[in-house]
Length: 396
Image: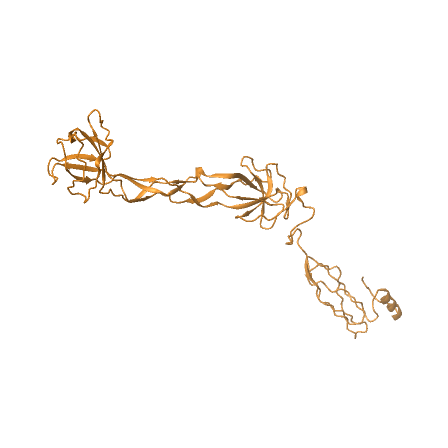
């Protein structure tokens, strides 16, 4: 309200003051000027002829501002001070559409109307239990994530090549002996055990007499002989386990698709109303293996890109080798006369003996031959996990 002048007699001025809502001692208080930079609606000086002070008019608040202090000028009579205005309050207006930090849980967002409230720390994905369907509209810009779950690694390991760490040895004895007659009724299969049935070769390498001397009435000239040396002993070898990824199977092959944008997923804040074909479900995903956040996302899928594991060393890895030698037969106790050499290799050999009988022997063994590793065990998967492991939780 603008007061232009007070003219005329004192009673007229008093009447005007009363009509304008002012006290008779001076102008009534008006709001102070806005000190925060808001636009000023009115700021007009008036004088009562006796040096009355300026009143400041009220400023309109902008987005943020502080009302400045204001003071009324002295009263009409020039002696009574006006009231002092207090400092204005500070006010900050919220930004349009700003996130207030309070989750949007409007009762209007329900699974019944296809709306899902996405829990904090989880991300919306379109999820399918197959890798044959393309990602749906609104979730198709980024390449799909082909995932697996429930790895079965029972056939995921095989045994690698054996490595010999210590060679085996061939023992000195005893050497088993067998014979057969070359006559028609005996054959040449060396199926008869000698008497004694073995040459102990103890002490090894000396001229010994614990040997089979041949049957009666036949002589060594009509015999076939078979000597079987002892099997190889000792030696160590090992075979590493190697991964066989072709043998790994999975309980499911899944596909997850991320939204192109909040709008394409039908999301406003943390409330989403995605439009998906029947082969896809609106699900949420979080890194690692974690518990599902609760209804409606209660069906858990622990997924990854592939199984990761190591393979144990193969068990029951044994050394194999052949032991052979030569049985040297003699007709005298010093093992110096009429030497007859017969291979000790487990095979039946015609003796072709030039003498009828032999009384002493020396056994000469050969080094192990055909040394190798024989793996009869298997390797097993250890520390099985999923690469890029995540948890996807879906509605039932």
